[in-house]
Image (cartoon, one colour):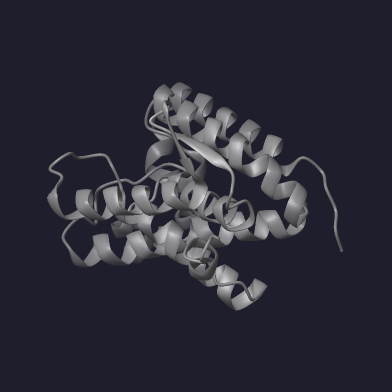
Length: 202
């Protein structure tokens, strides 16, 4: 049944509280961040969920919460809070599991991963699917249709995944969030986002 209870605001509050707690007690990073070695060797499977609520810096938190509010509020109204939360956690946890698998097998098992970005990219995909004519300010000044923005972001993340030497940016997690969002739409909602993105406009 359709229910609405401001889940987006609740998620933002949890993220802010978790950020403050990690600031006050940095040791929490070891227990709540996604560290593949701990997940596999010490059965710390809760980390594929809790990593979504931690952020590495104030700017990281600010940008993710801004995106969560911008895309999350209209999506929650459209889907209802329960379906919206299910989608959010499927994309976030799915992105975490994908990151866990790849980092474990590529020698990055001890590198912690934090951030809601996997789920945020999933929300971006959902927003573009339900509101394809909406405009998003790319880099805060260049307006483009939401589906175009998804494709641009996906292209940047894919390019950066194979070429960037920067550490601390989980490009794979972002792409996995898009992938699990697409699977959710196809399997559960019966909607293929690709058909929405590439439909002819007359």
